Length: 273
Image (cartoon, rainbow, N blue to C red):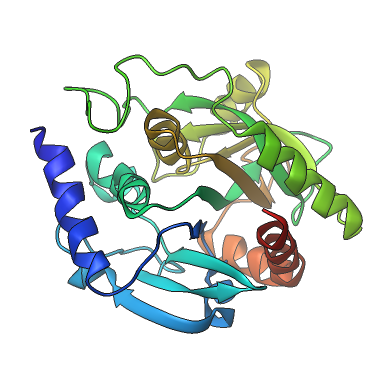
């Protein structure tokens, strides 16, 4: 049996002793967006550090807790914080929570992140549904021996984002009066912010937003047949677009400013999934 699958199975087996996540909606909360987890009712909470094979998170805004409960009447399994490739984790580790959720019986996955906007029509605070993505991280969680227990060797990525749930999300945004956009998310390796030249490159090949996460999770979800949608909070315009230097503090401040709108959108989506 593949060692990566064994590690995921051990994590899932432990979590099952604490909670039943079958048929829950998985939610991964990105930088500055963790407050939604505080609104989960009747929560069961597990620290990442207690889960076998899960490392601890090290990025501000990523607390590192797994929370099961209800939100807007829906059963949810929330990851308050994620692992990033730039922290030194392997792609297998970055993708582990996604694969574990599949093993736990989660029925769909909502990924959120903070991203830099390279579409000139965006502004800080814009919410963007990820319609497609570009993997520019130089690695892939599907690299190496295939996890036959989870999915095929050559998964198709034509419809990596679940169309039904993605359209539902856009409908919910419209009904809430949120001017949400759609676009292509491009994942860089990080941890430095991109250079102005890299942003011009990203714009040239069709990216609307850039970040350092989410793509490994989409790849792993598609591989194992877990329906997935992604929503980016554009917390800043990317390097070279405004002349201003970038900071993680700015990312958290903008995410905090739009958190009410973002939380409302997530709540409505899960209530209709």
